[in-house]
Image (cartoon, rainbow, N blue to C red):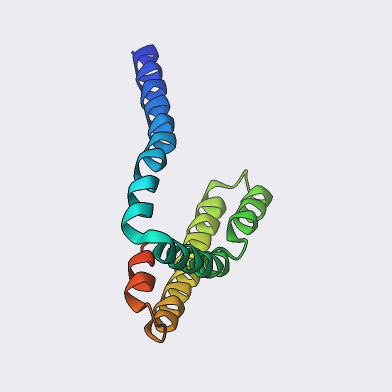
Amino acid sequence: MLKKSIKKNYIYNVLYQILTIMIPLITTPYISRILEADGVGTVSYIRSVETYFGLVAALGISKFGQREISYVQDDKEKRTEIFWNVCVLQLITSSIAIIAYIIFSIFQKNMIFYLVLSFN
């Protein structure tokens, strides 16, 4: 039974990797033709701005969580408490970044593009 699940998992993983390579190859020419040069440039710029907000949201919390959990790796109760504290911290910083991004996007010329790309 274990071998079947490993094979199945491997096949799903390979299919996923192929899709992550193939979908941009299919969609990029179509999107470029629809948006034209100005639209593609606008979307690229907005994605770069969005990346900065994503960096602020992350704030190195994963490294912090790994370090804190490694300190108490033998105490399951403490480890669970730290894990959930780190998750809450990530939720708070992400929420602040999303709110700041939405406020920022309201004052931009291409507000619709900013708001649509906020789902990233």
